[in-house]
Structure formats: structure tokens, C-alpha cells
Length: 333
Image 1: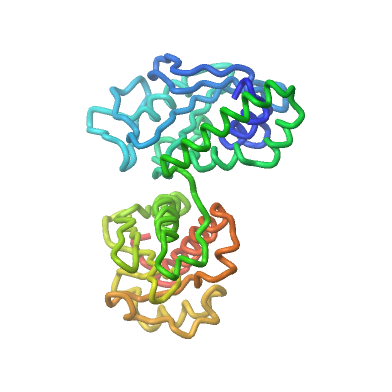
Image 2 (image 1 turned 135 degrees about the horizontal axis):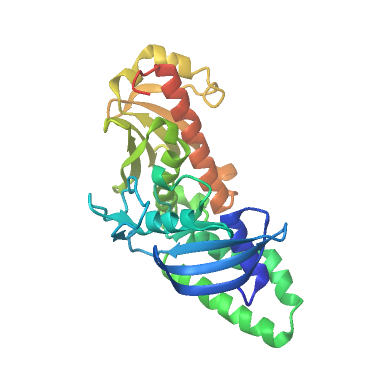
């Protein structure tokens, strides 16, 4: 990041926002009172000030349980090994960041899949969570390629080699989002790409609906011709799920609470802008759950980049789940 400022700028901008300029200094395995941080970058902002990014880097390991430091508190997320006497690495880094005066310290998280964000992380010291697939995309971006072409040939060759090695590693480790193609409906290996989108969406939907207390419940689970993810509410009650099946060739939301399958609620949903043209809104199409098609997997979807496909999947799900909760007027929310 420090040797290749253009790359460092793009990464730091993802965590600190568009006002990040470039990383002035980068250290790894840096000891702090909150624990040993995988990467610390001192980032010059466009206004000339400096912010310090504390980045916890994960591949498959969970967010580790740790002895709390002063001020570290709050619930952990489902990926941590928290016990009543322990906190998480992220909570401890945030506690350290909050204790610092002068140069602002911000905490970020780099993981294979999105994680459910803990309420205890909220505040100005929390930066952002990013996935390794975004690093892969940054390394292959036209902006970085143009930057390489302006370099001394020896330096360009070195950085091209290192970037190529990291991209190959991320690809080999299945840490890249590949766009789903039309051959999906023919039952090919494209299915694994859609499963990966579902594995991201199962966390991203609750993160977008924190005011409703929605949590991951299940998934992604798969059988021979379909797969699903599910969510529950803050009281632990089954709420809804998302499914794909080869037979239907579409992504659909299914509502697991019986009251959501009432004819009155479904009639109200038909007026929603995303559903007004549907003729097959069915109260018993999926294991006796109300079944709401979100969109068909057609060339419009297949022509999108992987991040755009994920964005469409999450946006549609969040919008319709919110519409269901409003329509149902559930006193639990």
C-alpha cells in the first residue's frame, strides 16, 4: 500500500471515505494496548490532517475472543467466540481507538464474507468492513493499470508481478465474486457463484435493516436444484427467506410467519412498485409460505458485474422485507 500509493489510496478510500488521500506509513502486526493489529496505516486526508486506520484481516478464522480492555463492551456477532467474560478483537481495537487523543483512529475489517455488524461497533471510530473480493477488483481496475503504465519499467514489472500473484491467490482460495452467467439455468457450475452471492446477502440484509433487529437464521443451504437463506427477528421468530430454484429460474422471497400469508397482506403487496406486474403472487407456493418473486434470472441480470448482481439482490430483498413489515403492522417492530 505504501509502495504503490494509487492502490493504497483506493483501499484506504473504501475504509475512510472519499476524503482519504494516500497512506503515508504502513505497519503490520503492530502492538497496541487493545491487542496486536494486523495492519496500521497512517493516512493523509485531503484537508492535510492524518487518520490512523487499524485493520483486522481475516480469511476463514472468526473474529477472535479476547480479554476485554478498558471500555470494551457490547454484544459480539455470530462469528465470534465470545463468552460472558470475553470481548472481541474489534471491540478491543475500538476501545483503544476511542481512548486516543489528537490523531483520529478508525477500525476496519477485511474478511472473506460479510460479517454481521455489532451494535457496539457503531460510532466515529468504526470505519468499514470490506471483503477480499473488493481487493481483487481494485487490483484489476483500469485506474491502477493506467497508473502502472506511467511508472519506471522496473517498478512496474515488480508491482504487476505482486498484483498478479495476489489476484491468483485470491482466485485459487475462492475469495472472488464472479458474475453469474445465463448457463446457470442449465445446471452448471454457475450455481456455485450464485450460492456465493447468497452467502454475502444473508449478512448484508440484516446490516441494512438494523432498526428492525433482523438476524441471520440459516444458510446458504442447498439441495440438487435449489438453495435458500433465512432470517429471524429480534425475538428469535422465523421471519423470511430467499430462494432460488432451477425449475422457476427466479429469485423469490418467502414469508415464514403465517400472518404474512393472509390474503389482505398479499393484496396490499400487489400495489408495491416492484410487484405490480406480477400475476403469480402465491400464498402457498413454497412449503405453505407466501412466495414473492423478486426478479427472474435473465440477460438483464446476467449482464451485470458481480457487485451489481449482489447489490440488486440485497436492494430488492431489503425493500420488499420493509414493505412486508409495514403492511403487516407487526407490533413486534
